[in-house]
Image (cartoon, helix red, strand yellow):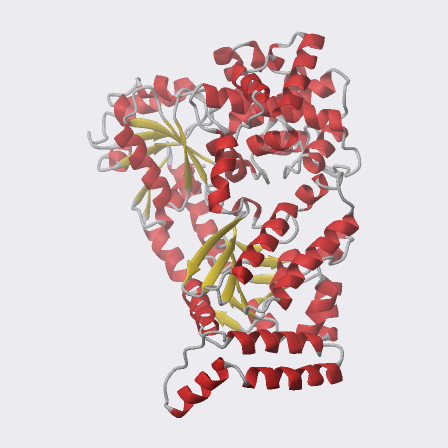
Length: 640
């Protein structure tokens, strides 16, 4: 974590002193930064010059005075032990200037207690990065009891300059936001197995394919380290009471040395096959139980003014890869259902973890949701999975699920469908520009866990047909559509991009249809639309090999129209979209229709072309275009 945070700061342009207690440790950290920067350059995430410049901004030192003597911010990243951290601050404050802010990277320890060990508790707060810091966008900015608003706002601004998304934690509370939800979720999963009410396979199948989370509960425990999870639980139990009593199953695993991936075995054996989670052992009662526990934690965070429900959802999406936040998932199921589940389990077991938070009970009784206010505001904003921006005649639709590499789920299909309808009904929109949020992915494909979680209400065939229909609307829309690709364009993402009229991509972008590697096949139009763009031979190559292709190769194949520098996509894509927006709307719409009609029947296409030509020739746009040509000026088309 320490060298990762240092690398992020150096990439953002800050001068960084990387300090550890001996030369070997600090050199190891520096070498990891050099390796990571090299990997980023190799993948075209940054240039070689940017990698070299970032490394030049990192100075490895052992002498503490040299490290912090002129620092504006001191970020402490030592092991998660209160006494160790206190000892570090006793040394740091002796050398740091009075102006320096102190921030601790802790996942659960008290910010207030640590801050009061220093000479500047008002200039002290938490800054919890997530691992690995170079990739993870979330930073929890945690207030101690003495932290000033100036300190917190400065640290939030720092997080933004580092390219991160800060989530404010308003009150110092064990586990803060992400761990306050994730750790009780893991604990409840363990209790279900310990009490013989479910198996590990059933719990993880339900977590991954019933709730749509990126990992099974036990799979995540193995990745984090069961000992780490147990340590956080023990701290929360000590600070918050019996609702956080650790399940004995976790202690048994730690006592046996089965800590997860780092020890070779945990709940799964990583020296053999690892975590193999079945897709068909989802149990509704387990799903409801796990979701009820998460909803209770969210309600507790909200009622205790630790964070609002919207911030909790954003934190879990960014920090844990949730497709939707726990508050939204709870609202979708119904709070009354989850309260009834908790009450039933409390009556059965008497366990404190099932005692319903009064705020949750009140919301359920009033038939409101944890995100009720956000839901009302969303009516004005538009969509949960898309952001919309308008620039003259260009409407920019941004797939806004960067925490899931902009993967496509059923909600996104609905939002794309609605957004395109709005564009087509808007007299001002002349071109649609489609991109993905962030610089890692246009879209990495279907969100399989999220889609699987929807399959209780619709069949796989229905989901395939719905994706084909929505994507096909972009292909047949009278509006020109430009897809701007940066990063991954895989699976369903490529199938969506194939429906655009023009595609522009950065050099670092990666394309492919990897479905055959998963034992499935493209289901949102890839087998048909791709062959019309690149030819049947190339389409079969792309689909049957399931390989990945760079942007230059896809340009050679005819899929990508323009390849641009990594840092110029926004400018070049908007420029292209504006050029199309200035074109003749009627002629553009008929041209798309004629080409689509003639795709498999040239004679039919030619006949429609003749009829369309006659219609277009009589429009005001045609008169304007001819007049502008004769006068050597740019035409001003009105679509009439």
